[in-house]
Image (cartoon, rainbow over all chains, first blue to last red; front, side, top):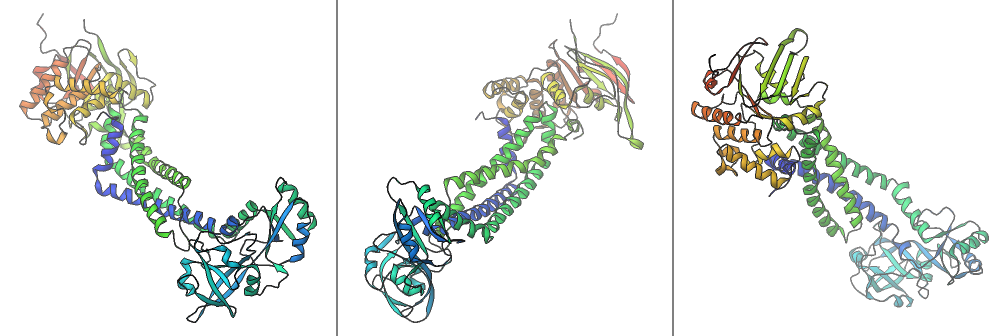
Length: 379
Length: 234
């Protein structure tokens, strides 16, 4: 095949020493899988911490002033709801109750759960991805919905199984799939009044009010009206509340920084390993580079050989790393904290791999550019 | 009429520094003409390889000037010198310096690839050059599959494939037996028949003298003699 000889030389240099080739690829794969896992965790974590906000039906959220995230339980007075409904452009203001409670297993023992209560009628924050039973059954007294991934924790295994929350009987009427909490505390969906009973919240209180504006109403105008008439609350758009929750969990807690630090470490380790193997490969082939220089090869020609070598390493290493990454994504899909992989992340990882390998080639290029072509006469 | 293809004028070269400083060339002037095979002979340490390196634009002279096809190399930087080498000079080395992972054809093609020549035509020219040195049947052989003489012929093919003005050969037969050495010199003599191309061979082997049209002797960094073995007596 009449491919460019720079490419051919690069590939032969790369594959010639198999041990070094394997070391290079292992370095890249290790590095990129580590970055992949860290970034995948970041994405997965970022999505999980906002899952409730993402699945709520709301144009605006009325939240207690200073609320950091959805899982930040506090209380709003029910009177605020009626004041909100009096604002021009507001179609509905549905209360949501959240809070921790103790779930007593049928076989004995307890486990903490996170209660999410809303009006079944307005379906402002109903369970989603229901695979058994139905949401409307939550209007039945004592009805709850749980996720199947928590069956073992909750000591239930099917519809109609029973347990207790705060000495009150509950019955599973709907089962979801993949509605998981990043805190590993199971979500339990129920009707508003029962949620108050389970969490001990007074009947005239709620955690949030989810506002829907009337058709044609301007959300920003409605928000200004709500902000002007309600005290000690913040009125946030869904996007704002999502971002606030995500920023709190990812950055205020330091979790995001830790994930980024892990990714950075992966990049540094990968760069050092690839640079070291590329440099030693180049050093071993110095007589050949000197010959190329002697017969008139330009500096660019020599760079090309090394850059091709780096890019080949990048493509092979990335291919393996991405394959492993997708296996990890698949394996963690049902876990408490799934690792996510998106086309965007894949593209970013590939770019990072290429940049890492090309940066790694710099030391080798500097070495080659210092070659004295006259050394060919002394060998 | 033969013309000068490469010329050194009053070239001096100092190697090393301080106590290790050596004046390898002390004002050498030498012109190589097209159509000639010039032998540069001298004992070890006489400066012949240094002179070859200066003529081959791999070393910059401390003093003096080198011109190739009338073009001076004075003031040229490393990239300019590399361009002069790929445009005008073919090299043959004592230890061949072939690429072990490339076939004979690709080794020869390298001489054109560094010039940016398109692959298909470069490969055709590489095949022609290999045929010229009698290796038409070894296109796809790797260096490890070739004898020493065959490897040197591949190296010669690489040196001539770009049709250079001058071929500089450093001890091209030193690693070969007599028969192979004579075959290599015969090929270089044939190459030197072209009046537009000169061949300069550095050697200390007197068995090469019969192939030379001109012999230049060097000692202690100075040219000390010149003869033309085949010159007709006046």
